[in-house]
Image 1 (cartoon, rainbow, N blue to C red):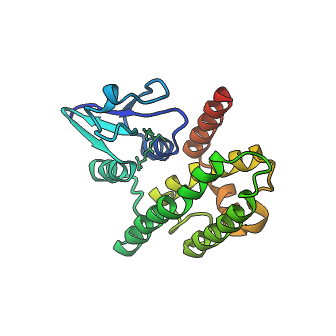
Image 2: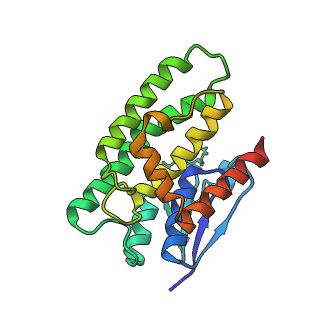
Length: 210
Ligand SMILES: N[C@@H](CCC(=O)N[C@@H](CS)C(=O)NCC(=O)O)C(=O)O
């Protein structure tokens, strides 16, 4: 089977979710990190949207982290990260969609604000609502779904890392006191070696960019 190569940015939450999956499954995937600031010329041939992550497999390329994650599961089903039943698989996919469609836009807005911006207060109100809705979808025993690390946990972990980072930068309270389910989930997740490694890598990457 030809080698798998992941084109990724050190700071990317999308690459980070895939790296947790790759480490947890023990996959032999080479990761290449292009310089920050993706050039259309460099990646346009592989992804017309010139975004990473991109998975290279032989002559083929796959774009979009959700599609890449599913491809890795299809290629290497063990340990499974799509739940133990069809219903759990559907719930995990739905959760990843909710993280991407409902949480990430708020994180991008948070990233764009400066300390003291009046837009922070209404944004935080919306953020806490969305976090509460995500909690309502979680099983609440330290995993998003079931009792094993899944693609849903992988998607949420870098998002929460960036929430910590941007809230800290804006000198705002942590999200944790208002979200016990998520706080407990994070404490369980960070015990996982693959998770801890990737979160430490994100931390190092953002510190280097400061
Ligand atoms: N929906 C995409 C999002 C990927 C994405 O936004 N990647 C960022 C890096 S974190 C990127 O390549 N940005 C460059 C650009 O949009 O030009 C996925 O899930 O893979």
